[in-house]
Length: 93
Image (cartoon, rainbow, N blue to C red; front, side, top):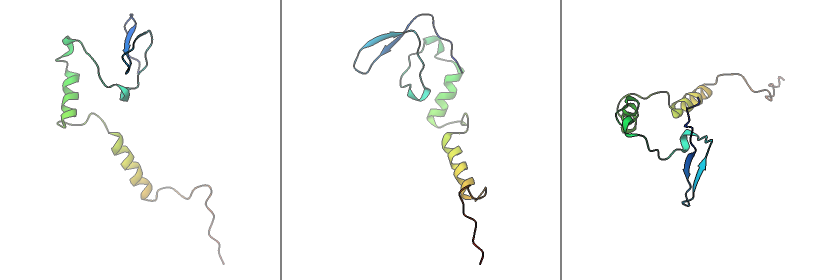
């Protein structure tokens, strides 16, 4: 999903202290470490949901990646599916 972007360049602070101005920025969500948000969003309901999730209260917002991986592993362990393409048929004697 694409987010709206401001008309002005975005300020980027590098780890070495260098400051840059970029017109287009694409950031993977898992790489975001720190964000400054406006004070008017302090009481926004979306942040209350995230706060409850971070503290471990309330229900999860979706199926976590760990649960999906565990379910996939359990299905493979149950023997679903036939042998792979390279399987050698048993020899009858």
